Length: 326
Image (cartoon, rainbow, N blue to C red):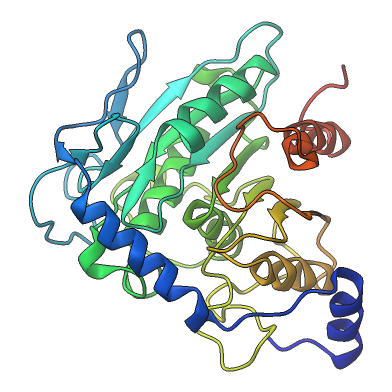
């Protein structure tokens, strides 16, 4: 989708940002992949804290399987997991005054690993404290040999398969989880932010063959939060053009986007082009660009204004009636 010249000019003037070609981003990511191979990773399965249980999301055969070189592995600290071939979900019940809202959480990691603490359990701790039931998805990441262009849809559909299936599973278990089947949203970070955009726009496409009755349910999120999203300017021929595999329409769910203007990994134009597409389609959308914050800030405490984004997200959830006002 190509946007009109006036719209491009307005956004350029508003944010005074230089749009970088994706080729400038890839070396940074490739360096990260090299660092991953040289760091102290070891074979091991990520496990949630005691009292929580992860469950498989597929009943039998997993669609769009791929060969992983070795078994699932963890970094030295155990907060990143890589080479995930068997996807799971972990349910974190709402605390305190529960709402009837649920959120599926997509950690980031460039589609070669998953930041299970910073962009996973930490996010669940925050949202459950606000009465939201969280479902943490450990989606498939094939490893850095397929990274970056083969790591996500359309080159590889595994992560999107897992995301769509999990939304359907949560919807099928709405009564059990004590949530409204029409109040199921998604939140994702970096590559997980791309997964947010993909689930928000490809819900009406048959990405995988149905495996049971659950797959007859809708996988459309009712709202979406994308935090420093990536991959949204790939598969394009021009600057300031949205990834053609993210087909925004008027039915794309309400969306909240946040990013730092100085993000050196997934540059801010990812958020800008997505927001522009949402507004052009007349989708209710809110965008927050902070001057400083870099990449992968998550919920890390900071003296910078970027650390206020969770409060802004909560107010937005109240505004769209997914959370009761405090």
